[in-house]
Image 1 (cartoon, one colour):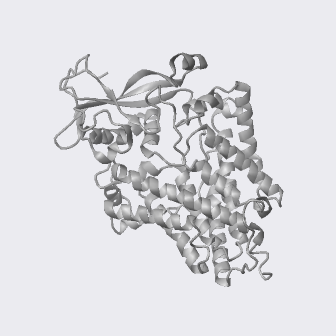
Image 2 (cartoon, one colour):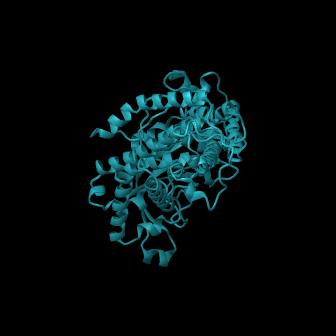
Image 3 (cartoon, one colour):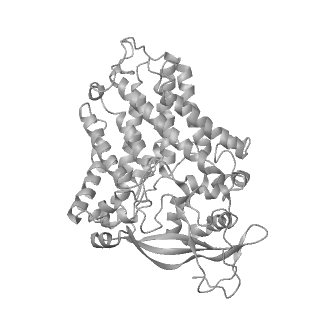
Length: 491
């Protein structure tokens, strides 16, 4: 192959292989997350039903196959189809396919997941959803294993990785002053949405090391991204720094697949010489991409260049938006995270009781969720790259009373009704085989235990109640929640 050396480069054959396999694995996780959680959150009888959303939002604002038809069964079929197609791509079943078929196979999970994200409402309002969609769109055009990787698509991936990293760096340096005085990690490991098994230990690192962490983050996100466009081996070295910093973040907390997708993008930058000792070399009979494929790639490059105008303008703006999509297809987006850092941690604790009358002696039983802190003696869990959507929204509910008012009463109604789909999202149901008569949600202040407290009690957290989030309520005949009788004990 010599005709298109400047457009297709065999030196990235293994990089493409690694990228495609890992992206397929992340698609698989994303579709599993959707299949396992949608009924309680988005289903016909969910907390925020998709049919109600579709009645108020036109197709042009939220392109989705669900505008053609929605039922819970159809959603399940779509999600499990995504799982099957992602699994096939993970196993490499598209590698030997004709170019047109390979592109079509990679377009399927992109279109299906975009359809889910665009009707996912508050449960899908995260930057990593758009990042997976945008990455998946570019992956469509990489081609199968018997064709040399299109260079321009690889450069578009570098441009995406640059925006992810540089956008995150700018949102920090422009945001909370603690990023500028290097003290944000005094708090972040404790106050992040879902701490992981090692977060307690990260929190207790010496403060000078926390400052080193922040400084390293600034270098990795504000300086290193420019080196992604340098010749090899400089670009590979820059990608390696991104991979190491993202892996550090994965160890320190649970951020769904945000870090994983970023690592996968960085791996597409790595020169094949790095993979040579570990993975097979490219076959000697690689062919050039067909002319129509290259023409399609040029069209995609032109589209991305045009759509990059607003994200670039956003990067240069002092009012930088974080995790924002300028188009309904989410093709070229803005990214960033944790522009501000909480100094204290609050959690919504939901409790119920079977008592028929509420008194000061009422026995309240607490619901335990799969990822968010609850029982102070339970060690934080590793759940990423899986995304526990309800747990994340409960973290936001603890930050915003308005956020809580939007959907928390709906969750309370489901728990009071003993809804099976909702209870599947709970780690421990305190009323197995029955349901509570009354429910309440209380805001608690949480902090990590000290080394001494942990040694003495075995607890990971210390907590104290702050205020009601959802006052004591019961289930009305129409299925809505109503306040408990006047005079009932509420706190």
